[in-house]
Amino acid sequence: MTSPTGVLTRPSRRGLPRAARRSPTASTDSALRVFAAATTVGLLHALDDAVLNRQPGVPVDRHLPALLVVTLGAALAMLAFRSGGTGVRAALALVVGSLTVTNGALHVVHVSSGELSGSDVTGVLAAAAGAVLLLMAAALPFLHRGERGLSPWPRWGVRIATVVAVGLCMQFVVLSVCVGIVQTHLFRDQIGAPSPGFGEVTFESSDGLTLSGWYAPSRNRAAVILVNSAGGDRLGSVAHGRLLVEHGYGVLLYDARGSGESEGSPNGYGWDWDHDVDGALDFLTRRSDVDDGRIGALGLSTGADVLLEVASTDRRIGAVVADGATGASLADVLEGDVVSTITMAPVMATVQLLSGTAPGPPLRELAARVSPTPLLFVAAGSLPTEIAMSRVYAQAAHEPVELWTLPDAGHTNAIHDEARAYERRVVDHFDAALLAEGAGR
Image (cartoon, rainbow, N blue to C red):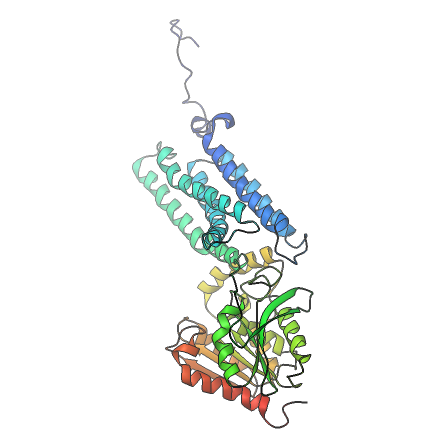
């Protein structure tokens, strides 16, 4: 355009809204293109993980609701990024990048262990895309300072408020969601050859999944099922199995669904592992070396939580050792622990969405229903709330119940930290319940 004097001038941007002055068009917005591309890679991995390369034995529609929610969230993030200022864009890149890199990193770990299967390829790509988004989140505030038009005090006020808000969001929401992602995307360890004295077995869960494990035949007409911690597979409970085998018990070690060589999707909180324990009980009741009424169960961490649920209704379990019971749902958080309630709520919501399963009743209610089955709680001190939570469950339970606290032992590691005492307590508990005259029927 020309000035009144006839001199050619460049159009002024001072009269334009701030968003118009600082936001490039979509065709020239390189940040938007990078964000959209990285987010799309994350979505492609979600599709691959949920549908194309889903876990064996999982129906095609199991994870479709989660995929729909993730797709909708990604679409909304792209729209917000397109119209948002620098602060909004950096925050979106940080959030989406954190979630994407968390999911993808699990596949990177899996591949680095020498394995490549399922959705690992798209998972590694998702990890790279998430890393790009995190770099973008760090770079955007330096490349585009949206608050430059403000005077110093308001400018620093905006910066501090933004840092605080994003920090709280990351601590109480994003980090918790990442924990939920990890708990539903645990990769499978290679199992290898059976431990000496054990043989390979398979059996079906009560909802039709094929589960794999090892079994050592009984020499005393009694047997014990071992239910492992969040990782799920049999490798975490081999030491406990060997201990019981030495005392003549038949021992069933198996991979929970979604772990090791078993079908199904992983769930670190064990919300549907009750079906696996049902199948294990069916397997043992058909064994000729095991008498009816002489089946016990030992659970570690998540496995302990699951056994409280199963033993509350299934009287085929003649004795329970709950080693490291903590919490299986938001209802199990200690009364008055507001911080844990706030941080665990997004974790539980994420696990429920991604797994397509839901938690059972509170553990204190389940513990109250285990009687007359003998129940031994083993609580170590390495986790801040383990002893307190086990005390709640033991107080809710009815006789016969015993709480054994080990303040100096590690979580589920009492078998090593207090080896002799652990052997005596656990074996005596099973002997009294399963080997006493009249225990079998």
